[in-house]
Image (tube, rainbow, N blue to C red; front, side):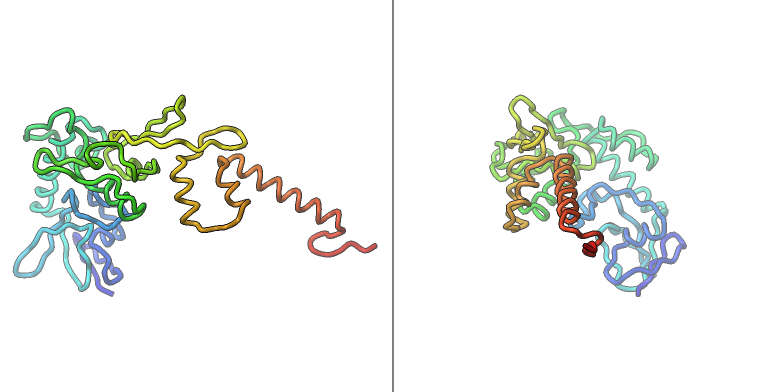
Length: 273
């Protein structure tokens, strides 16, 4: 297996593992924003750059997607690598100057503010990392959102900036968003879930026992179709909230033990008559 020497620490990794994997194994922190293990690393934000020593020359690479195929030497704390990451963070702060998550990460990196002009309020907080579009496309297979526009007009949006018919209201985009730009809003009176800022809505599935909100109706249908389990009881349990589902399962287990006892069985052995 190849080895990676990171800031003087030697780490052995599997062939094809990334520099970021090696750094985490060595306990060395590298800031990331667009990286998430659920999707392929796009290296969009460039915040994880490190310096690769090739002997005669050195090169800046993104650690989240640079594969380790042979023994290499990497510097996370070199002046060039630190300056590159700080410069990227200053650019990101120009996109989301008031975002609390981004400011906390910038503080940990030692970056205070940005010298660049900040964007308009309507564009604020999205850092264009692409995690939301990747999880919607790669994991869910829906492609309900995508990048649109160029330069300062580039944004993540739905087709024609209208509520997307392909959105199932799963909220996966909100879960992976590193700066909290995408949010899940509940509309109790209408019984709908909204994915903001895309304004896409979906009806919520209501627990058939207690009336609690479970998930969106399209998510439930999507999950049942993917599971391909033609079992009526399974489909009934899927329409219950977790608490009622546990109660139903516990009741079935109690009923089964009672029937077994009535039949004269204890721990799988029939009682002597």
